[in-house]
Amino acid sequence: MQSETQKGKGWFVNECDILYLRGTVDGVSIRQSTGKKATKLNIAWIKKNAPMLLIKASQQKQNARLNFNISIEELGNKAIELTSHKRDEAGNADYRQKLRDYIVPFFKGYKLEEIKAMHIELFQKELLKSKSSATVKRCRNLLNIIMTKAEASDIISKNPLKYADNVQVTHRKRVPYSELEMRTMIDKADGWFRVFLILAFSTGLRSGELMGLKWSDIDFEQGFILLERSLTKGKIKTDETRIGKTKSHRRTIEIIPDVLKILKTYYAKKPHPEWMFVSKYAEPFKDTTSIIKYHLQPLLAKYSIPYKELTTTRHTFISMMMNKGFDKNWIQEMVGHKIQSDVTTRHYFTYERDEKRLAGINNFMFGGDKQENV
Image 1 (cartoon, rainbow, N blue to C red):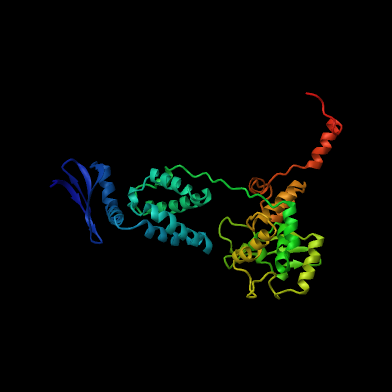
Image 2: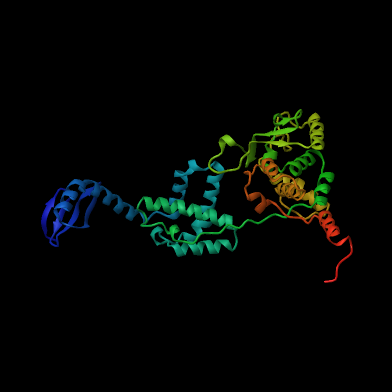
């Protein structure tokens, strides 16, 4: 047993002239070195700070015990709950799903303190074999929230995410519908779905924004859609309900003349007094599942058009407008992208050769079909 040369309330100096804490806080017995020599200055310091240091040491000891019992699933759900105010309901549901389906199965055999940077990198590598880089990145973000909470609570000594290589997100650019495919879809569709497709192809509206349209959003006199909302998983999203960096759903959309005529005809026999597009149950669509299954896929199959996601109508609008030389700023205003943002070009635009333009240049340089010998 260590002999004591000096002591006070909550502290003592051992035979090696080192300051120690000693006491009991909430039933937790503390006896540990401060690592400091028993100089006059350090003794004055411990006399003043011993009560606070004992409380902190007790918390660390309790957390160290907790570390052997708390699971990553339990801590993960708690971390999501504590940070839920930073996300909307869909975002929190997505995090809970990723915790349950991806993170817990991989790390269930680890104690929290055992998880190192190399384990994080291995998790990312394995998940990338079957999931997109965006999904893996979101799992990493959730892991960082969990480990940051663990570090702040002294459950772990350091957050391993700080030392693990990051995930480079790569976006898959959709192949737009061709002009022939677009015209076939519009010509062969009927009823409300034809109007839905015409608006999608002529405005670049998101699927949720189309599902969320009300008659009150249409200015028939001026030829505008005054967009206010989107429907996502049955929930109405507006700019007022946004949390963090999410999509903008408030903007003014220009309606081209022929589409305006079609909307006026559709309005004359509107299927619902409030909503533009409703399901067979006379209520707004909760998501695109039934639209795709019962309307889009049968239409594409009937006319031998390769299947592409419903949201590809948006990519088609952007690509067509940019290939036809329309102003990029106007396109970005229409689709709700930030002006000068490169997301429009990187993720939505597919370049097409302008044969007429190239033929004109060819004629100017080489006089039509004449070609110089090289």
